[in-house]
Image (cartoon, rainbow, N blue to C red):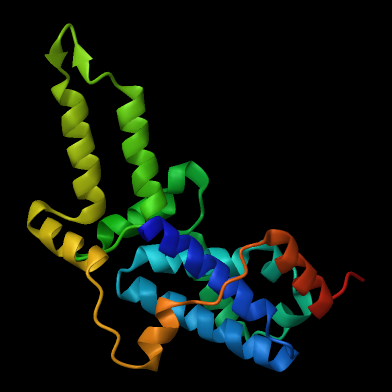
Length: 198
């Protein structure tokens, strides 16, 4: 469910920007998404933070040079700072270091959590000579609790990820059913319509 939400938010960001017909409105929208990403990071919701940054960094959006040129300097600087956290080099070192410093509760970037757990699970046998490999189990627990906080906050993590507030107004209805275009070719066609190749 969280992986689906991450993908959906990324596509939603792209869709909203690429369906915005005027340059001025696109600039305003990108500024708003940069602010939302900064807010998600401040609230320690790294899953949504990554989704928004990845949506803005997607090829169909990042190629809009006329639009990005109009983004004010302070927003470009903020975006650049946020991008450094998502840098995948050295096994996402910048993100891991930033995540360690954040106090709990916090929502990790789920694809990276799953990658770490899969790597531990696939790279280590569960049994050695018919004995349970406790080192593997300890490694899985350490990895899981690194990403989700300590054991005390494990309860918060489960509740925060799977329980959603009831829909009270149109904002909840809007976020429950995001309009997304889930086709990369269509997204690039929209991008080229907005800003054709020189």
